[in-house]
Image 1 (cartoon, one colour):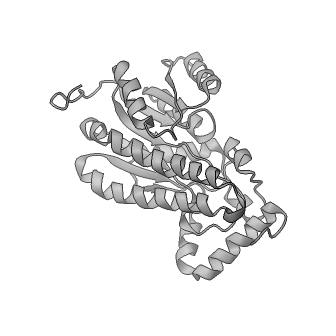
Image 2: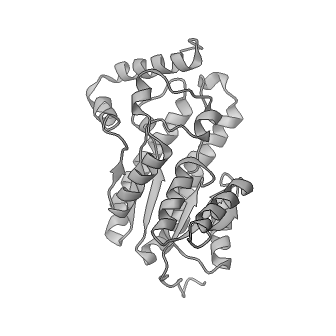
Length: 274
């Protein structure tokens, strides 16, 4: 399509879901498919994506399109747009779910891994959002960015991860204001701990007070999906979890930092510089 000939509004809404190979992303893909959307699954793991596509098709839904892509690559947004264009697909919904975290003191963790985290959690999310913005305006669509309760507080012991999620919340809320008048909904989903492959990669075991904030991937996905379709600015799964932003505003910042550090010390099993 040229700039003079924008892609038409599609009759079957297309939902692009990143990080769709497992966890919240996979559950969101199922919800979109169940509602009759054409789904595009995006992640690095081909086997998992195709297994999910087969499972959705086995339920009597159209088989999702699978796009195997490293979203941390600088040209990932262009590659994804090209992949959709080749198939005649135009996104009406964009779900930025891909991301990962690392547990440990920032100065002791591998700098390259932490920069890769920023590339995926922040730069890829931003790049995809900006790349698809014009299509979403034409489609009068919506964006679901997957943040975290971590984004409301500083996170000693997972400093870079918490900071990336603070960016996701701030960016999403600003876009909600900017794109809303143009007909595009923007929702940020902020779950607490979710037992998924993300937890294993991060080296995280949920214990203590954070255990009360835990939700399943299915619960988080349903909360996010309903909020997206309702054009709500933010979604926080779980009644107790909704208290976290309130506490972050009411408690002294020093107190919040100490509470998060205490939680991470329990996870690490030692102070580890905290």
